[in-house]
Amino acid sequence: MKKYLPSLLLLAVFESVAIILWLTKDNLFYLLNFSYIGGCIALGLAFFANEKRYARQFVQFAVGCYMLLYLGLVCQENMQIEGFWYYLFLGVFEAATIHYAVAKIFGPLLFGRGWCGYACWTAMVLDLLPYRLPRQPRKKLGFLRYVTFAAALALVAGLFLLPIGNLERIMFRLFLVGNLLYYTVGVALAFAFRDNRAFCKYLCPITVFLKPMSYFALLRVHCDEKTCVRCGKCLKACPMDVEVNRQARSRKNATECILCYECVKVCPTKALH
Image (cartoon, rainbow, N blue to C red; front, top):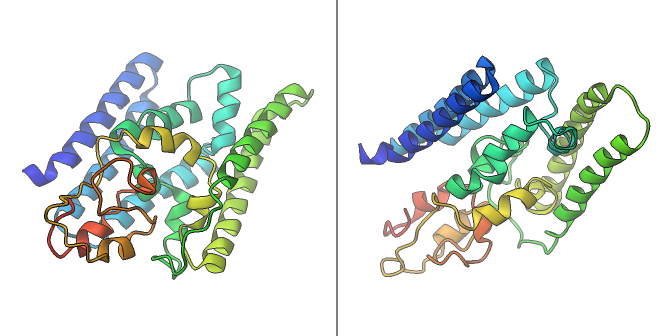
């Protein structure tokens, strides 16, 4: 049962959040929502523990499609960063503010950037492109994520400062336009840099929230440096250019790890776990 411990731990965390929000907000939706997401992630990790190749893709599509199609298009909730700022400015703790608190602000203390690897509906599509492993060295363009972060904040702040009505409808349209823009730019960058995850590395504004907490993540890839033979296979297999053959939290691109465990799969000495 030891190999299922991460699955059970994450399921317990999501179920706890689901029950607390259900009772606090007196809304059954939160119980169903977080139970579904937690169940999908737990099942995916169980598949991974049994060495199923489709484990991560299962979670990506199960959670990503749910959030994009159901929450986004059917329920018309803006789950992008603009939706977070919108509800935050309203002073309402629901929808996007709850989502960000659990998945992208406090959650990373437990599972780091696992959201990027298992639940992001943008990466869900980008990971289907032909450049799963980077074909070029990482660019020094990470500062651009702070530009898009500030732009999203300025956009929503401007909507509140200007006398504009029907903000909820505007936020839904921003969700549609934002997703179209993310996919278009993400695909273009993937082909331009020959790297499926180029958008995640350079432009995604959500990583500004994810990076600080991810440094202290409980769940992360560990390296037994005494067992490691420095073959470099793990470095070539990592889609996020993380220096996984070091144990220290200060390793290069440490907060970029999406817990895909591709490095673990190729390690010849089982030094990674």
